[in-house]
Amino acid sequence: MLGAMLVVFSFYLWNGRQHFKHVIIQTIHGPSQKDALEPLSYRTTVIGILICFAFMMFFCVWMGMSLWFAIVYLLLFYVIAVTITRIRVELGLPVHDFEGVDPRTNFPLIFGSRNLGTGNLASSMMFKWAETRDLNPHPMPHQLEGFKMVDQAHADRQRFMISMLVAVVLSCLITFLSTLTTYYKIGANSSYLTRWYGSDPFNTLHRYITLPQAPNLGPISAMGIGGVIGSLLMILRTKLIWWPFHALGYILSGSWAMYNLWSCILISWLLKWMILKRGSLKAFQSALPFFWD
Image (tube, rainbow, N blue to C red):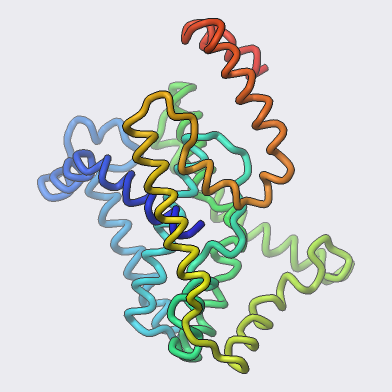
């Protein structure tokens, strides 16, 4: 699915080029009246992104990553994060777990674990939990969904942003404290995920180091095929208004959650098709509150 993700991200980047051009102009020339409606001005946002990216890159290099590997690693991390957020925004799916769709899993397959070096492999494994393992609890989709709720409620975006930042700091501290305290008192082996949750990245690292591999043409070919399929779906979705299939749906087909939610999605799609087929767009909009309740 990584190939399709890269293609979808490229399409959205191209389609939003005028907006990004406006953001660059506002960053250079200063905030405008439009910036007043945003939680942060575009200039502050861009500067913040650059500072955070530079800090993360420094942190990765300090851990042992090569500079080129740190740059590529973080860029791919952000590409995946934006795509997952787009899935949440456009499709509204409550879960989006993609275990294995991450830099630390795919780079050893693409470049070969023997070519990356121990420093790159070891430091990337430490990001297993920073990347939230399966992308399901990734913060970006939930944060953007929160801003959408703020817009619907006509609330203050800036106050919400401050509240969200405070909640992030407090929740991190509380989570670490409660998890370690509970594991210490009851035992980590009594939890749902047991002890393998912490040992998994170290076992993977041990396999990479003791059994170094060359670039794997199988996964590389699969990424290329996924990219081609994603491109075709995006082009057809853009050119043909009646085309029912979406590249984001193709990406979600590899999600574990689809094993549990496919029937719900099928029923909702069928009901939507029946309403639009027998009624109209107005009828569809009138029926939405019924399904919300």
